[in-house]
Length: 114
Image (cartoon, rainbow, N blue to C red; front, side, top):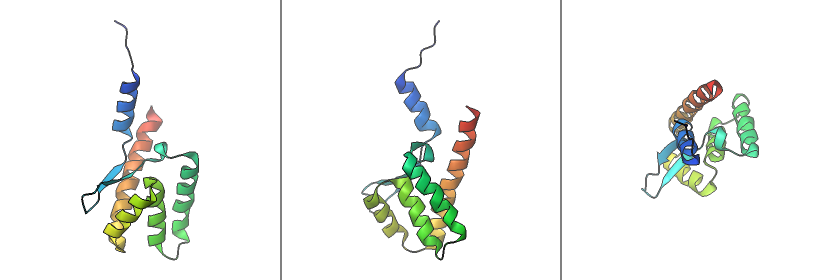
């Protein structure tokens, strides 16, 4: 029997393995999805890398967290609504960033094996 791999199979596997981090907005109006770098454009990946490098030199890490999250979301309106939900609480941003980073490392490790 011949194996068949459809584009639907490819997309389903891609979505399952490299899905982003979904954060439901507090007002119930939608979801902010932080996309993995594999789903970012080349320019967005460069901007993300540059923003991550700024952690060591940043006067305020909140700005860096917001920059990274904004790039990962890819939609300024949705990012601004998430920022309104998070307020200026560094622990909240740190939780989002750490969860996103953990997912990135898991995705990168599994993608390097395939």
